[in-house]
Length: 288
Image 1: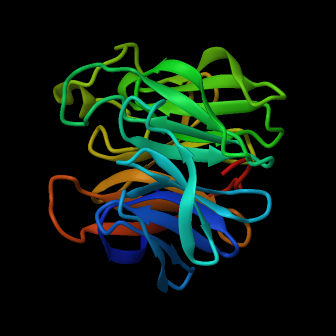
Image 2: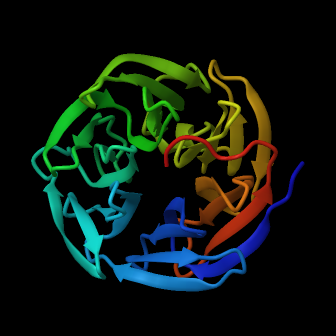
């Protein structure tokens, strides 16, 4: 089994990794910072987000978009300044989370549905924010929509439903709206549950990324923590275990074959987060 190598440590809770312009960009929930790390492990702080940063992406003009979780806003970062781009507070059931932005600048954003500590099964939405900043709900009744990818042809969105232990796909219409909802890969048949006693035994899709062979890497903090590579239909082709818990992953590097795994431990306080790497065979594809 492949082993990861530590690229950076002393982080809080790194999430939302994106390979962009030769560096890995990521959010840190605990320090409320957006940072980058290069392949030598050099870290740089890009911005601080009081509302806690999560999903990251870029518009076609290279303006950076940032999900601000607790105030449920999408921000833009231009010339070092954060400004509002879209108010999602009237659309999102609870704190906003991960995001994927396509080549046209359409951003798809999920949310928790309910506080993580509650056992309630409160379903959530996927919100589309267009390049103009106009926002609308394009999918409902999602069981904690989390990590998300868009295929290279920009015709399919796949979203991890954490509380349902599955990846769910949608067709993307020309106007950005979604249809034809279907299971892309189900890891078990237990249905929707937010019960922690069940969650720790399941594969929990958190951050995800797509490779050129059509497989999706899934960071799962369940089952003791693992990153799995799965094909449509649910066939698991590879597993990678890490020392703590993986919450996100991203392919990148000059050839797209470095898998970055972002790990932390919610049960421990302080700067216990890491970014780890492992080499894989198939390169990055699609968005993000």
